[in-house]
Image (cartoon, rainbow, N blue to C red):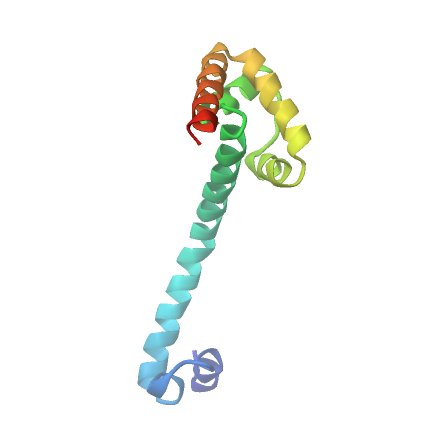
Length: 127
């Protein structure tokens, strides 16, 4: 890259990295490496965020994430994690219906509900 392009990309950098060509070139190259890497990491981070949101929504109804997803797979409900996380945040009644469908499809989901209700009952009367 020529000098003008380097300085254009280095605009906003601190210290001599914005106006000294040698340092600016090194900083711009490193910044481009970071941006290349983080375009891939962003996808990874978003998937992780969706899974955390789904897990939080399912645990409110006494099911963990793995059992919930397994139940959906058995029922052949093909909603991706992005859509499921949006439903869990913005439409709790629809999400509860999905949790109930998953619970009936996978027997591992049933026992956790009884334990959750017992814990809630105990906590209520400890107050």
